[in-house]
Image (cartoon, rainbow, N blue to C red; front, side):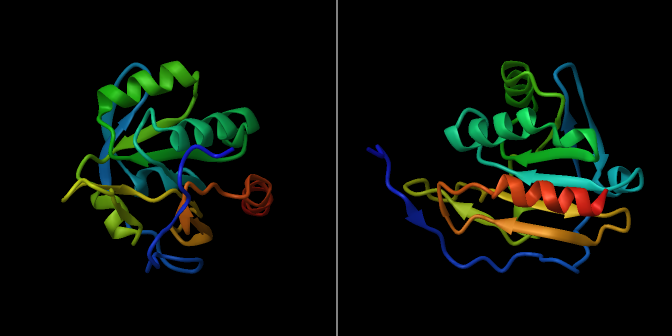
Length: 169
């Protein structure tokens, strides 16, 4: 028995396959430190899997990152996340999940708005987080694959993402 409500999300006017991924610079966090990094810096090194998730500690973020970690997506391209969590929360989350992935800290949710995927949080006026999403971006910052949640909670088809990663790598 499900102990939470599944909620249909409003239609998202998000970036999609063939679009240029909006560039941004935010603190990119590891278990040990963080530094400002741009998406363009990462794509200059090769393809990037950009994963938007709910705040650290929420079950959707935990489930998504455990699955991505266990599937080892980072073996064939750079995988980074974005959420509204602070660098301190990211450091703890990365350590607890035993992840080798870096996470962008975007407390104001500006990156999600640039990508067209903000999700206002019920009962919290003025507070939003990104809706879960996965974008595969090539070295020219062209989006080659896009998945955006249409309900909460919602998760990507991990096998489909892996197939898209194989096509990109």
